[in-house]
Length: 70
Image (cartoon, rainbow, N blue to C red; front, side):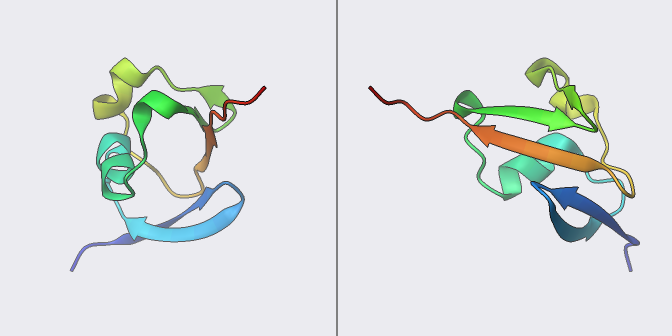
């Protein structure tokens, strides 16, 4: 059985598998990478490094969607 960890996403508690890559998490949640900014623990994430980042207990993830308007 995989170990579970707690993270916060946009202020909401979420329980996920330990050692989940950020890229896999975003893919599983169908996050459109071209239309969002991603912040992990108050730092903007370089989208080129998503495959190298593993989520850890108590990480705080903010996903901001771009919205057009006029």
